[in-house]
Structures are given as structure tokens and as C-alpha cells.
Length: 408
Image 1 (spheres, helix red, strand yellow):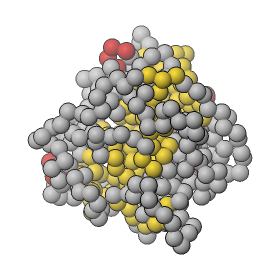
Image 2 (cartoon, one colour):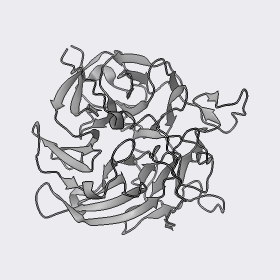
Image 3 (tube, helix red, strand yellow):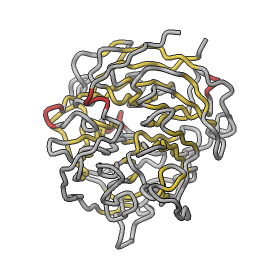
Image 4 (cartoon, one colour):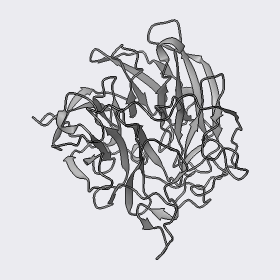
């Protein structure tokens, strides 16, 4: 089995997903948007031959090294432009291109001069416009030099394989009261809107109560329309029209959502949320999605009450799977497998843990099912990622990109 066994012990890197505490408070400074109408129906087309009924029959996999020597890689994705390229996000502020098995020396984008990197901060997310071949633009989420969250749009330059670093347009700025729990993931949903994951603002235990507060963007999953010059709020967002809530909010009650994804076949939304003291959780919102889901933090940690002997669970969406800290300490969300190279995984949601290196699989069609161990590794699993065809990759923060393959 050609699995690389790496365990790099770097203090700043190891803090990335663990929720280290800080005490420097900053007041919120969040921009207000306009509103837009829904752009298309939320319900994706169903693939009846590869939908929820499909379930994994085997859990065993191996990881095949694809690229090494990366500088604290956090994520990998594609532009869906037919090029076969992979784009690797490095925490330090660079995006690298992998093409034909080689990582290009010159970055696709380098914004390291404006990124505060280290611990849980840095360049954290990347998403390409669904119409990227025509619009030639993409979106990033990073921590600026003041420690605040920036969601910005960039355009590709006239030079092949290079973005224009001067094309930045900041769409959203969120002040961070502490240095940890920044979330940072971006992805376009089947509805064409951009979804943005934010952490609860940091420290420990959500001292500001941001997870349950609807007047802040912290501790949320946001949904915005970025089809124009700035951003607008879709008119069917669940909090639109409420005086006590930010209209960008799609879901709330999150501590530090570290990677979410949409099932290609069903449109189901999978969200992994890093726990506080004991529990790591996997959440899912089934299609057709309506939003407004409350995942419970900081009243709940996973399926149990947080710092209370009893609590009222009414109104909370409990996880479909969870594990305690005897099996890991920081969940890394993944994807429902819809590729062709590993048929046994079809219909399975693959995810892992940053601390233990374990990779698990869930039957995506089951309402609640115990996770099955797919592979034990010594990788610092910072992320999973897909290529254009739905094949899965694993990103090791120590500097390696790996491809998911059948065990034999």
C-alpha cells in the first residue's frame, strides 16, 4: 500500500483546526448588502442511476501520492473548465496549479503579502465561478493582516495560468474577535449561489454567543448572490425580512465548520463542524433545501448538551454522525463519492480527522448510521477535494497531495 506516513509536528500548523484561544477582542464590522431574487430552482436534477439509493459496499481505500513539497496546503479544487487542472490552496497565501502530474513553479495567485497566515489564519478557501470559462473569475476567503475575514473576487489575467492580483474586489469583510475559529470554506451550490462558512469568532466555548445570535455573521453558513459587481442577498434566504437577523444567513449554530460540500447527485449539503471538548460532528441538510437550520452550538456539542446537565433540543438539527475525542480531535469534512475509479465508495460520504489521521465513510442515504473506518493514516488531513470527474483527493498539511484509490 503506497500510503505516505508523515507526521510533521509544527506548532503553528497543528493549531490550524484545533481551536486555539486568543484574548484580543475586535468589534464586528460587517457590510450590509442589497437583495436579489432566486436565480434558479434549488432542486438539482436527479441522477436515478447514481443517487441516494447507492451505498458503499466496501470501506477499504489507499492513498496514492500525487504531489509533494507544498507549503502548508489546505485545500484542492478544480475550475470545471475541461482543462483537468487542480488548484491547490496554500495557507501562506498562494494558489498553485497541478497539471499533467506536475505542480507549476509560478503560482496561479500570490496574495501572501496581504494574508495573515499561521495557526487558524491564512488563505482558507477557494471557489470558481460556475461559469468560469466565460467569466474568468474566482473567489477566495482569507484572513487579512488585521486578522479579519475577507471574501474577495479575483479575475484571470491575459497570461495563461495566471490570475491578476490587482483585480481584487472585496465583497465581504467580517471582523474577528479572536484569532481562531475562522471557518473559511467557500463553495457554489446547485442553485448558483455562493455559500460561505464562518466560525463562531473564537476563544473557547463561544463566549460572545455568536453561534445562536442571528445579528452576526459569525458561527454561520452564509448564502449570497455574487453574479453582479458586488453581492446581493437571495430573496428566499430564510432570514430575509427579519429585523433581528442578518439576511445573508442560511444556517447557524456552528462552532468552526471545517469544510462543507454538496452531493453532486442529490444536492444534499454536508457540513462538518469541529467540536469543543469532546465531540466532532457531521451534519446534513437534505434537498430540496430551505435553510434556517440551527445546528445547536453552543447549546449543544454534537448530540449532547454543552456545559449543562439538561437542555431543550427542540429546534436543533442533530448530527447524522459524530465521534468523541478518543478517535480524533478535529474533524475534516469531505464529499459524497460520485466518481468512477472507486466504485465501492459510490454513495458514501468520506471524511477524516486532522489529529488522528483516520478516514471514515458513511452511507449517505442512511438517516443516521455509525461511521466505518476506511483507512488509518498518519497524515494531517487538512482537506478533501474533488476533480472535475468527482474523483477524491486528500490534502496533508505537511505538504502532500494524495489521490483516493481502491485498496487493491
